[in-house]
Image 1 (tube, rainbow, N blue to C red):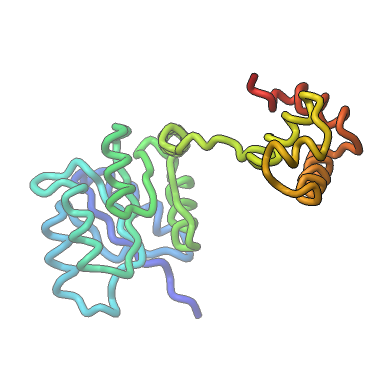
Image 2 (image 1 turned 180 degrees about the vertical axis):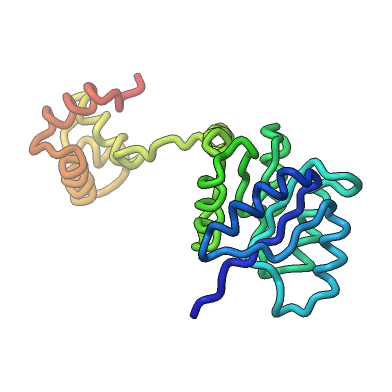
Length: 219
């Protein structure tokens, strides 16, 4: 039989710890593996326990007495490398979100989330996904989009093909183009056939017209 998801809770408010404890007791596939009011106490216990008794999930508050959650996160990862850490906090500060994700948090949930959202988030992380508050997910998406390099679309025609198409538009015939570009007529014909294929046309006037309509001629 598959073991229950073992959850370690690091939260300094006793009332909220009790809320989470009661919620986990109602979940047949979860168990509270331990709860601590400070990161230091949790780290001490993890360092004492044998590796096989590590928790599967660590629910970590950020605003803790003494060592804060962000400071503790990498230390918890070292002490329990197989555990996945989900931030469970009131903080929706953008810098906290980015820092936690950068440090390796597998999820970021706000305490305003429902208990069902929290338990579903635990299962999602255990299944290999990421559990994120909806507002946090939207913020991360915007941040990612803002930092993506702006890619310039690859030109449809190569530089040489554009040279030949431009000369065709200027009225030059194949032999004249070959002389002007110092290439063979056979090579010109090959390029022209490629141009027709890429533009999905069958003759030079159609190719020139389509190139104009597509804004391919810069001058």
